Length: 146
Image 1: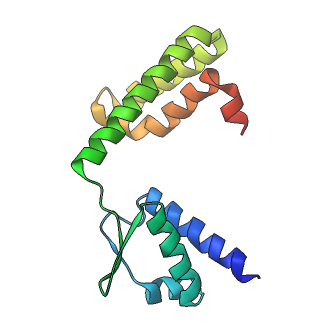
Image 2 (image 1 turned 90 degrees about the vertical axis):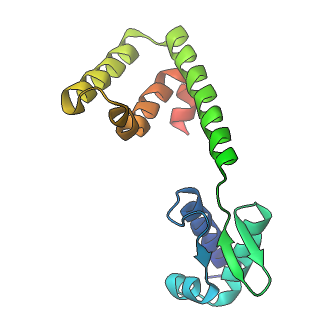
């Protein structure tokens, strides 16, 4: 395998781990441990960490190592505000463009939640990814094909 491909793979995997919070905000990233984990030398790890720093996902402090950038309370509020805006837009689009088949699918999902868990904020949180997928289908069929 070519070194360039390894560097890209390591970068992509580390980035995915940060974005999914498998690597928690504020957690320390040790080159040696990462190299061992991925079965590579430290060089592709260093390259990936530098790219992640450029993207604002990792902090590099001289003689202190690397850390996943912590999420501030302000960041969390911004993320929630953005999510609320996007979800409202998705619902408006569904209402405007949905056909009966799409609405039946959403209703089955809603009924399933209530039967399985009953009404609660936790119920919504548990099923959010599936609900988001069900809203995306009628809202933007091109995105679902990608």
